[in-house]
Amino acid sequence: MNTQEMPRSNLAKTITLRVSLVPRLQVYHKDEIKKDPRVTSEDFGGFLNDKLEQLLEKEEYAKSNFPNCSILSISDNVIYIKDRVLRGIIEVYYVFLNDLTISRLFCQYDESFSCVHIIYACTTLDIAKLEHGQTIHEGNQGKISKKNQPTAAKTY
Figure 1 (cartoon, rainbow, N blue to C red):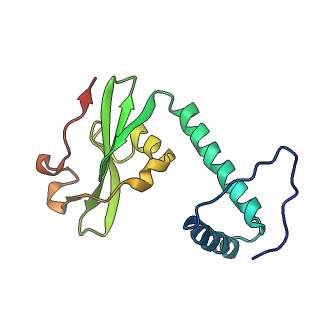
Figure 2: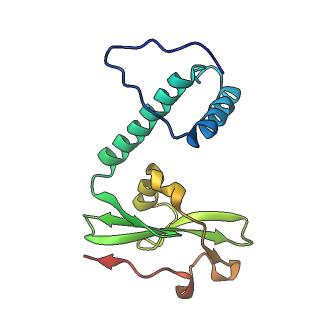
Figure 3: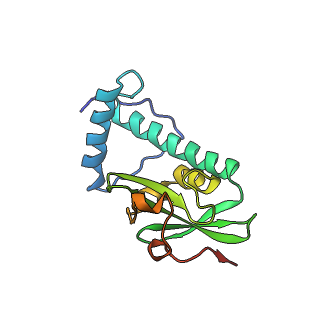
């Protein structure tokens, strides 16, 4: 581990990381340095600060570019998005295509793999909580059969 420390400001705060989280972060840090040493801070604290800043920027991007969408909840394989323009709850989930080697996010409301709800879902951290789910077979010609769909979009 690098012994250099980041310069500290009088305004800097000390935080405590979960013991179980530190080894995962250290492995992640080392992997990022190997991938691109020019853009990855060698200082572990600097690396964590950079990642936290990126996280905040991602959240701010989602809020400013999708002000009418918000995550209501997540089940095992469905993200429920509240869309204030449509005044409804939109379901986004993974489907497997063809021979189960490819999975894509699918928006049930738009019946699309590339709508605003998919893009919004990808800007959130909640996407990582989603489990892969249903199957589309080639014979369905890209359509999801009703029996494989979660419940229909809801209005509120």
